[in-house]
Amino acid sequence: MFYSSVASNVTYNVSRNSHRETHSSNSMVDNGANGGIGGGKNTRKVCETDRFVDVTGVDNHELNNLPICTVTVAGMVDFPGISFLCYFHQYALHSDGDTIHSKVQLMDYGNKVDCDPIKLGGTQRITRPDGTVFPLDIIRSLAYLPLRRPTNDEMNTLEPIHMTSDEVWDPTKYGTAISKDADWFAALADTTQDIEDGVHRAFDRSYSHPYGSSSVLSDMNHISVFGASSTPRPVDYESMRTYFLGMPANIVNKSYTATTQFYSNFSHRPGQVHMYKSPIPAANVFRRSEGVSTDTIYAHTSAWGGFMCMQIFAGADSYFLSGHECRTEYG
Image (cartoon, rainbow, N blue to C red; front, side):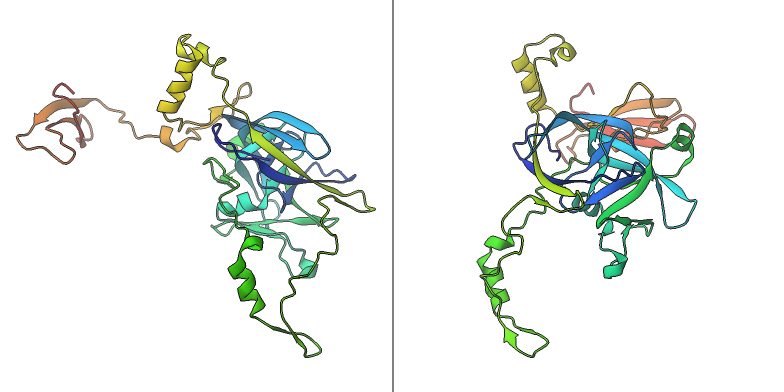
């Protein structure tokens, strides 16, 4: 249901599961979703990007102009009474909906996600790279991650951990169409498998799934699974003119093309979440809290890169020295 840069033309597919039982403290871990949704019922928006998506389901249900955001929740680990402040980056925000996690997006950040029930030999858990374990509840054959909306006090006191990457999420990065790979079929056809009666059989290319080719499945328990697609919304350069001194829209477009937009997240207001550092690592640069002395040093031989002079800075208290190349003779 998700994201990419505004210039992307990719269409994404997800599955959405719904049933009559509502679990407001749970969030679904969906094998069929290729991107996460932050539901307003149990998450808090921390910051947002300048990217949006439109989502359309096969039942003609549409979710338009969903912003790509960072949301946070209070999640309980495998020790009762211990919670963390979990940050989920690059999630589409659906203020009136439930939270859905993409298994692939979680795994992309190094998490091990096992949605298989314990009764079928699984572990029902999400294991982070640092070993932190989050239990999963299996409810009517669906995996849920227990979480809840954090309080103002928990926003300031709980230890923060990040569950997904804050880089732009590209659901196509792990695409592998082995169903069209002739070498894969040839290799599989050469293997045989022992079955209980001792008969060897080769891979049967005529195998058909018992559900046929239908993309919509339903059962008597009121569980429905349906596909959906989303496309990123392009930048409205006309509306951005006010931020570029009223320049024409084509000039704003060229400015976007010629510059980078690494500072991709913007703090959410009102209800600003208290943070000591910016959620954008590039903004957390080292700065001296002291006076400095500076001078220009010239050389007769060019340094690497062709520079002939540099500006040197000396800390008045720390005596720390640093130098930066000068692109011109005057700085």
